[in-house]
Image (cartoon, rainbow, N blue to C red):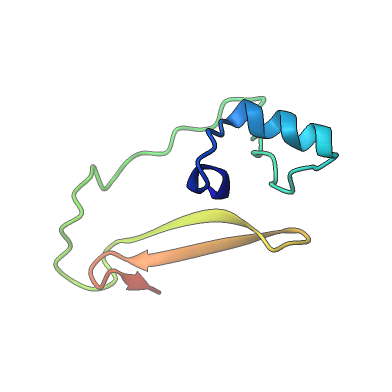
Length: 89
């Protein structure tokens, strides 16, 4: 940080105290707390059993979903991969 480059020892608590004295507020988003499911989900069998070596295209697809903060709201990104080509479908 700029303070340590100039020879000042700056820790998290000192930085927070100085920000409070100067009336500064961090613009960092707080970590998102995911909701816990209220009921049990049906168990889905694991057919792949961590055998990721695929010999032909379109044998095994896998997917994932993530959330991206766009500056104003959350957007969802869903990706489906063909494990043979290791590329999105």
